[in-house]
Length: 336
Image 1 (cartoon, rainbow, N blue to C red):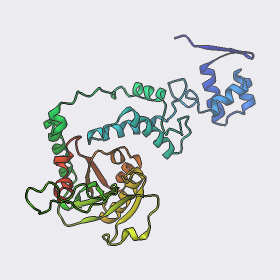
Image 2 (cartoon, rainbow, N blue to C red):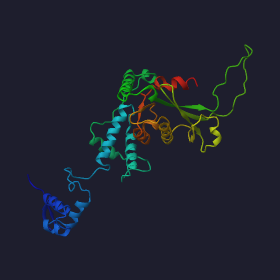
Image 3 (cartoon, rainbow, N blue to C red):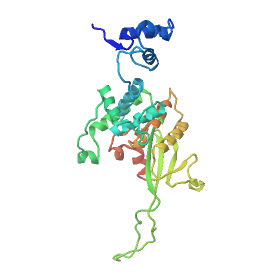
Image 4 (cartoon, helix red, strand yellow):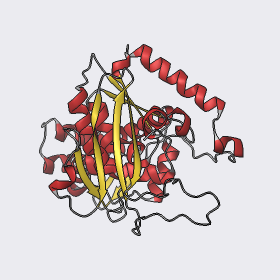
């Protein structure tokens, strides 16, 4: 095999010479100046290869520019994508580049990602797929009317098979299986109730509010055994929350606000911390949390990591099935 030679102002040297020089300098057998003179390698070149985390100098076979994120971090992202997809937390391209940015920020890594958008770049995305060929962006099938209006038998079967396996693998009991759901409640009734009046009369009047209703979100969570409920989170559409808004609320409730009156990623993390403090899961007594696929739940890296660190298993319901499969929808919010 031919040995590649590199010519410089101080002579001709090979990659083998460079490797031997680095090893000699690393072992302390010889100083930098004498090492450069002995092997005929420029001092600056030798020092750069020794200090610059150069792949060749550090024993890697692959040469060239290093990736933005370390290989172990990219492998962690790859495994997380597959794990989330397995429990119906499927990710879009935008979700992946957002996840890469959040991981880089969480691990305090130096990166050139766009901090204004909070996303990695397109180049990183395509290179990432090249490095992990088992991942691909697939075009979903056209959604039929029957699927949009109800169930897909395959997805429902897959969900219950996954649920059954999780219960068996972690020896979960009914008291360890929780369901979270949120619902928006208008502060003004949309429709007046029916009144008794004279038959045949053209119009019956009723005093009604002229105000437009404001959405208030209530987040509830109960276990399958019916033995425990987590105090609700009530989210008002406001900028500030006066103490009076909590009057009459169940003890331990979180009274907060958001610009829209709906839950967001930050509020869900706050709720997760309260949930963990109430149910107190342990390594030997894990908790399963069944929830819908809202982006504040399934695309929330901080919440997912919080669940992993605190022995909470998160399982998302399949898309377009919550009106039938969500327990709180059927048993609590519908009557409410």
